[in-house]
Image 1 (cartoon, rainbow, N blue to C red):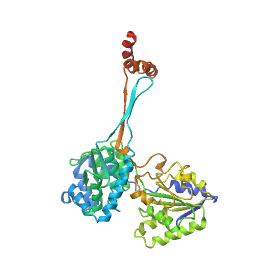
Image 2: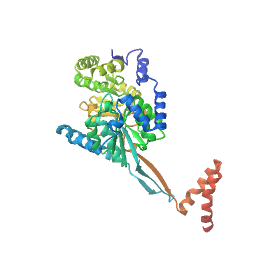
Image 3: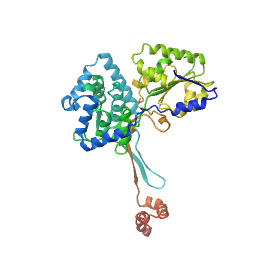
Image 4: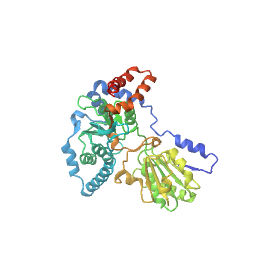
Length: 435
């Protein structure tokens, strides 16, 4: 039975705190298993990857092929049904347009002391993207990860994806070709993350790894961080919907189930100010579950992790929403902008009654790779800057160094670093003697 709370209840704070702090990641203690896999790949390279692929994905890489050829990816795109290809290209265009607007500008200027300072942005040379291939195949994730990398200017983009029994979804390959992926590898799991991070005989290491995956993949990304950059450690999907009784309850029920169907550990939460409307939405959820193809997963998610929260006024929901810091937030109310202006923490926000979260997953443009597990308090969705790094620069002439050098000498001496002070002082002395 889905959890139902009201801010008017005496025990609300305790129950809501439990909801916020609930651990929805996989129960297994996988850290040591992942550590062993990474060690295996680092020690034996391709042999470990092949062995683990036979174990988990049930096929021999030497027979099925380690890589999917560019021609096969191109053929997958060419073989798509016309309307599906048009939709995929439409999504790619919108995603590319949005991310091109994220490109940061270099800075280069002369300050009041006569020092030339600034920063220059460059893309990483090689990036790896992980695309799930187990519970479901997501061509949209290919576009959302690959297009920002290409817009950023990454030289070589490597995609890894598990292929259970050697099979791979043609739509994933079509999306890879459309997005400009340079290499597609038939490997997945923690072993694929390790191969990307440290390299093997066949696969050269990358600089950044992005993309969603299961708990083993997320843990592997966490463990290799520092050797490579990562986008985030992603957890189960989540959505918070704020809705009044002017919405069709059938719509809101579908919105809640749009995340519940991802995984049994996903979370869907409704805030509303009308008890009868809450009942209507709840009834529609049950009704839709009866005919939903993903009903088994969505039912467990809704019953175990879902919640309906009653508030007297939607302003009461603001601090609660910020504490949840959800991946997705829908504001299906009369003045969504007014509420949005007061909310600090959410991965992506969907404003108004006609903006379901699902449009963000596919065609709106902003990235759907978003922080989960309350991480929206301190992190953002995937962007072009995840595939870039900023290098600052400084240029002093004699006069500029004379203007700022004495303060540097004083601070270096105060820190007990005489060589630091000397490296500045030695340059100032000739200048002082001439002037």
